[in-house]
View 1 (cartoon, rainbow, N blue to C red):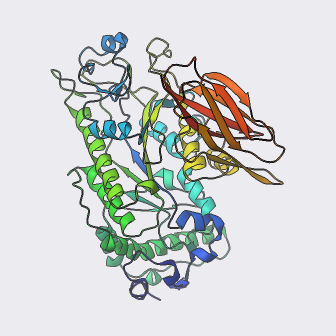
View 2 (view 1 turned 30 degrees about the vertical axis):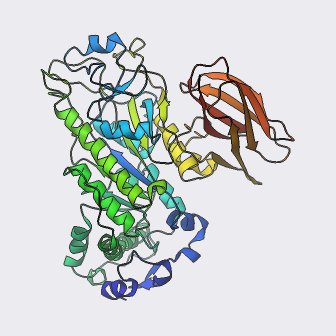
View 3 (view 1 turned 90 degrees about the horizontal axis):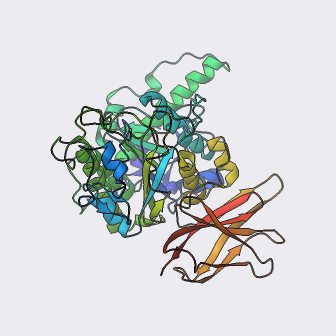
Length: 527
């Protein structure tokens, strides 16, 4: 069957699973029913979608989330510091850059998490090395060749690309595929700037069956050639699938900003609404725009300039995208996060800019996100030997939250993907307070059933689910990770109790532990 016949078979409806042919040019396309439990969950209509937004170049975190009550911030940044009056208030001590109005609105709706001080041990200040570390989810002294998303997708679809799911596993809106989407065997996604261009590019050349491939048999070279041929065939197939979803996608009633990132998120919305079952989308600026060594702000007005424009583009595009998802009834299926290879130095430089630094905040957004500020305000006293900020959260604590909470994967799989077990330090970023733990002999599920009252002023009763005869406990921490108390779980009633009358008003983390499994949720204290 050629691609013309394939398109006429599946139509332009986003590819109904039951309509998928089993072979395309002798190329297997696996229907969901036969695709295994993981592939079924990945590509099922009720599954979650992750949007990754890469801020290439190293975003200046201190001018993004501003410690407006800390005089040391203004001493270090006499020209580029954002004043307290100009910052958009998040807390009594923190504010957002004035161009992040869309982010401020999402935060006030409880749909935005701000994670402070994110980096990794022994951070590298090189753009190339720092980016590779974030994309591969490795330690600073490990050189990875596959991305964390690519490894995850490889586990879910182990026979890809010789056996194709009905939609691309991942889509990058750009010109070249990110290292983050490479699996152990190779590319686990497709990349294009717009669906029509992708379709024209694939269909402008000869059919894949007309391209000669040498047959090297069952040898390393032969397996590599077959893999490359299968990848080429997958692009051939997915060009039609992507165009079909784009043609069917709803015409947005939301006005997206006429910017690079706005246009890319509009394409993502179009594909999702058109039925594309892709679960990971990656978008980024075309260049290292956030590398703001010079003229980061205007010399006369710190609220305008290159960095301000970039943050405005980001905020306006994300706000439009989330409004679009809400109008389409898809808001609860979509979550997103920003990431950048490093933050900037605490002190401004002589060119009205900032140089390469270390830790910085990142944002997680969506209607199923536990909106809060995670971590303490930037510590501008205790710096490293180069005057940069120390780590508060390992970036893999965020990745682990995505895998464990958003995609509801077991801790054993998350550990496999991230090369270490981050289940006990995963931040409670999502509203699905369930964690799955698997061992060699059995699997068990633990989770929170209820927390009452929440918000609380004094006594709190926590009801949980743990395995029969299992020992369990609940820890209470503040958002910096400081342990404030521990309560045992009663084996018969499945309850734990706290008194929070001595705590200040704010948001706290409850962690349920049972064996080596752990899961988290939030407790709000009011006065």
